[in-house]
Image 1: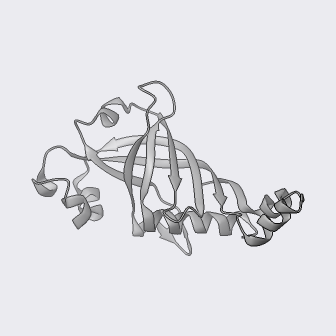
Image 2: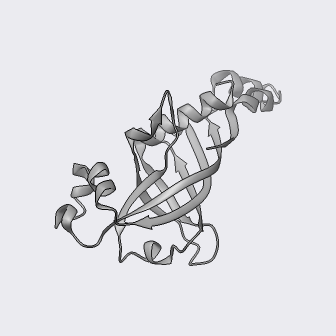
Length: 167
């Protein structure tokens, strides 16, 4: 990885595959992030870089959903299953019960959480429009490890493994 675009692509690919993020309000409320399953809308894919919002199914009765107000600021954190991508994002969170979007994002994994199906009146979505992210790519390698054992500074190897990007 040598540039921000490649690192960002790796993040979106990992998020689409692994999906679990910790999501919470950036300020106020109870300050706790919750594990949530991210949904990406394929219709927001332009070229090789996703540029749409991140969606999360939830219940309209959930604590987080109830706390989201107009202009709510979000913090989200992600670690890929194989621990080769880490990210923290900030952005704006909104809520909706838009049936068209629920239909578009609905899948068998989401259905497992809602015995009443899509028609369950508590089915709701949280929309995260990320503004900025800091993404780290695993810089561990045998060469880096050897340099550390020999007392060399590994920071140079890690310089191109992090990106601060606008999303």
